Image 1 (tube, one colour):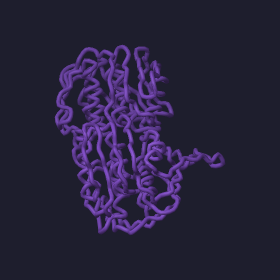
Image 2: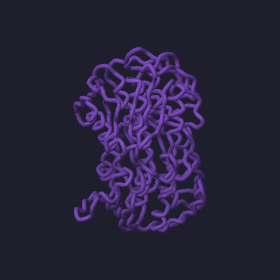
Image 3: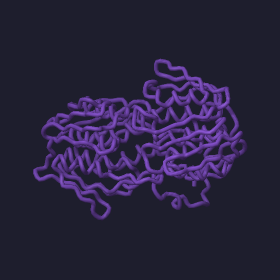
Image 4: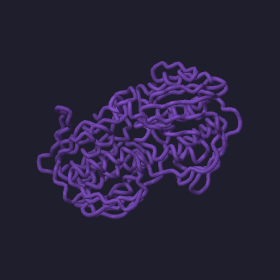
Length: 433
């Protein structure tokens, strides 16, 4: 079992370089299945979700070549199987993007139901199925598999209105529609930066996708896509996590390799909480010297405050002066981590989607267990803020989405190490990787 050991109470100072966006990478890698020829993808983050997706493509017959630490060349020309049911499929949420990619390429897909973080809420794929059905697929869920097929081997264009704004459904339907016959219009589409990045990647290969970044995306199907070279955008949530860490622990850090516009929804709240933020061309400088102030936050689809930043920001607010209210506007329940914060002396009351946080003068280190990716990152931030030693278990969740989090934090003065205890079986905590 791997654990993080943090000795908190130290401000952070220096520079952190942000990796490629996890949520873009896990969409773009399956999208390579649609192309004829090799796709050279740059700025790929070294995280476990990416590793598992690449392994899935290898298992299907894809040719994966490593160019350097962050550059891969993917060729899926030899893939003929429409069935993906390996253990890796059940370990990550993004594996369901293979449904859209396989339907687009083969007109058929048999894909294991995805895994990923279970942070307490139901994460259905009904909007995905609704869209695939509108495009001419027959879809059923049987024995833990999503089985989708078309009568003539090709999807057709359709007008699709998503009942809720869904990032996953928007991405999956874009993948499916890229090679469909005719025009597909996705209304009430998600607008996140990684959706724009996927559209740009597909368009660079010859797709015709317009409107990504708005709530209406129009896709004119093309007959084929060619390989090429593409660089993934920086990770908005990784950057936001380190911004929150500085806001919580104090200090001054230059966050490099970012798109500041993508961070506005986060930095505005951190400024309200007492941090000073300066935007540069491709970097953001954050410092926090004054006491943390209380704030009210409601998570919303982009460009609102990201749900994936809710736990990290809540960690900061535990030591804010006054009472803060956090409203989760995306998922039914994303507060499983609160019990861990209570062990550190935080004062938080949860009622459904609402969390009321009474700021305390200090947190105390404790033994914690990460329950999902962003909650795990929030526990790291809480550990940096706390006095004493914090020990975090189940860090495999954190490593799903953060490249070298230990090295990056140590480089700015954090006292954090990763240790492995061989006597404790890791399998016991791998319930929903």
